[in-house]
Image 1: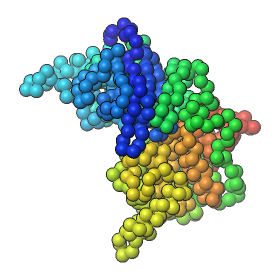
Image 2 (image 1 turned 180 degrees about the vertical axis):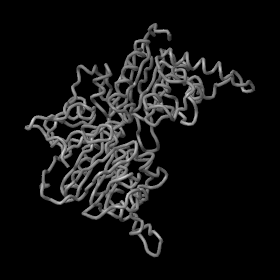
Image 3 (image 1 turned 90 degrees about the horizontal axis):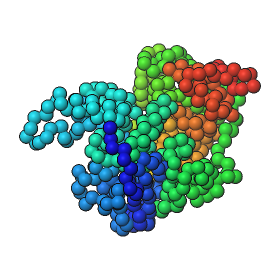
Image 4 (image 1 turned 90 degrees about the vertical axis):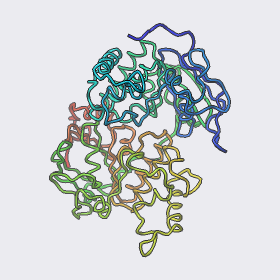
Length: 518
């Protein structure tokens, strides 16, 4: 078992940290201090300076000014990778585990043998991996390929790898972004047990309730500055959001609300009948009418994401039909879905949504290149003008259409993805977890954009397990193990919806939202 004896003073202490990238001030006199065995939250809007601080705490960037100490000792020299690995590690939202390798190979990457010319003794290495995983209570077969692990198991392997190098300070960057409720519970239980061994965590999340569930202390950054550090018990959610935004939220109303303009006798814009996809969902039917935002709620194994992707043409269902405005859509073909009037916001903007080295304009107009030129040639002037309109319409914060999309904050990157989905003027917008990994103000703006699609007489489908995403919906269908198990009108309670998503009994009181009817 790791030595649980306490370390005197903070496990990490940063003070007066400033960092510029050209004319951009990424951090200005920032600070943070994390105690041994503490879960310390770091929150702030996109662009607040969190990512820059992480890169400094892990040795990837050097601060322009300020001091950084680990366990009271100065930080390692720049470029001393081995020394940095013994001080701090970061488990990123995008896993660094290599799927094609085994758990053992990932745990001991670049240190499989005792010397460059010495053979790898696999039996001994697997035994070391077994002992290491057992030491930290990670129930994973060391001989298993990493691509067969669940998301939380991969996170546990990354944490175990960092601990095996000697690090007792671990940064968790949006660790729950791809976990369902059970996965989050498992992760938090593991983190609490490691805290008892003296391991300290810096927890970075846009999900503020998780800050209260896991952490004892919270630090807020805004506009590259440290704003406040306080015990979470002394800072309620209103005060926390005010510190993040600099604006009072106690009397604020969201920019959107379910309009309720759809009428039951309106013909559906989108109609799904008897759709089945092996291993994902079975005999599923739903409708979305003009003016309506429909939520499709469900945990990771519910099939809701695969259904959303099927509507966009990414999967070919075994049976069933999809129609838009009464016309059948050829399934399993993305061009057919686009031609039928289905716009799509994918689940992961980094992998499925953006070409990072291309400009904002190029990314935003990928679905309409045929409209931006003549004789098969795309005209840069038309692309720029089209992109400028979308930048204005969605209030995308960018120096200009030619800016690489990778230079934008997460919230503005997501706006580019939505802009591309809306570029074709779709009849139905399908958005999967549209606010994943963005700050609270960007969430409101993005959901407002989805609401505007419906208010203009079209339909939208939000596929998510995030309750805040689903509040904009006129009604929500809850999925469990590939089936719709309950339907809720606007005004549902968190307890009702979460219970249905977890496979518990749906609403039965006639005064409550109705059970499924499609």
